[in-house]
Length: 117
Picture (tube, helix red, strand yellow):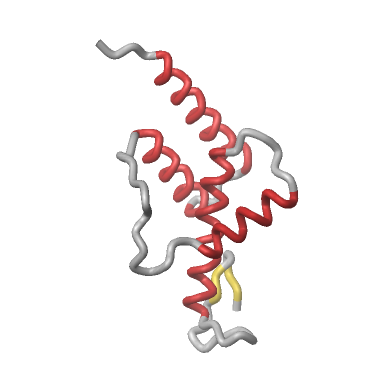
């Protein structure tokens, strides 16, 4: 049984033998990836762009593999993470997600104009 994009039955496996845990994990990975992709989007994506992003989402880093470059986490990263998690958890309407995305862009734009002395 499916509810809110999640498999509920413990005994469920698909035709490839994937358990419900693996399926839910893959769904969550895709949702997280495209949530971040939408926040960083600066143009209308083509079909090829979406296909490439889906491949990136499904591939992801392998277990035990560290990312080559790690940058310090900023307030913008925290805000994007908040938006991504809350938009899924609270099932935000498109307008609410758009509001927070615009807010993030305004905040980033304002931050670039600040002069630190």
